[in-house]
Length: 236
Length: 119
Image (cartoon, rainbow over all chains, first blue to last red):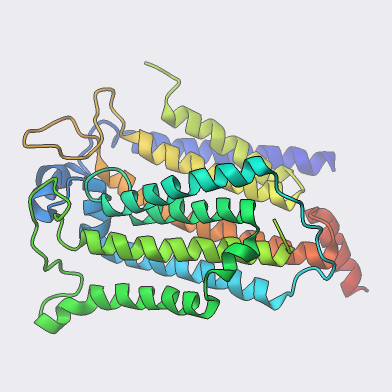
């Protein structure tokens, strides 16, 4: 036992050394900053988005982001599939009566958290944020509600079959929207929308639309994952 | 040269996470270590191209402010989403294992599987 853990420490040290070596090799890149120089020089003009990170992942490298959304969807599907197979523990977990403090603070906090999520989604092309982070913030706000009110109370407000249809419908809409330029005999993933004034809400071409769709998708996905875990356990 | 920067902290965190991943027997702690490793990689990628006078790559107007490189920040997004996917799925598998073997100890689970298969 002692010997195996000793050899594992040695292996770990070697792996860390490899990691450091890779880092040292990339140190030549450090300070040069040439990888993103074209984006800094032309990104805002070409895409119309003030946030260059959004401009890269929703315009120049949209293909990458589409597959990322697919990875996210597959993860949500996997969580739902494997947890639905098991019906969860038989014995009812005793419901802990939530305190007044949690209920009141959840009532106070949920609207601003949800609003912040929507703001992050809508202004993703102008400021830090975007569909992924905004959707997660809004979904986590729902988790707060589930902690305070009980997950079943929150879940009853959603029609689950409709939620599932909406989740896959949004994915379909994103993919169709990305492929839609084909209809106009252009390459897929081309941004056909006007660029707008840099810094205004209606700028950045289709980045805003992608952000809204991704935000909705991530919001639903986060809630589905959280609710699958909660339902499996019985109660928070 | 300042030795306490994002890259060195990322190396230390990577080592801690890797050690936890290999040495700890508890599956949940293994997953937490995996998250730590992922976080250290993100920290490393983002701080690799940091500069002291850098500003966030958000264009406020014409003119060349010293923006930091937006490319690694955009690529790190994939790492974050994939980390979420891996952690969520791995937690589900840990839950299934716990349901069957009633322990999160990886060695005891291995032992019980060996006993189940039998000679």
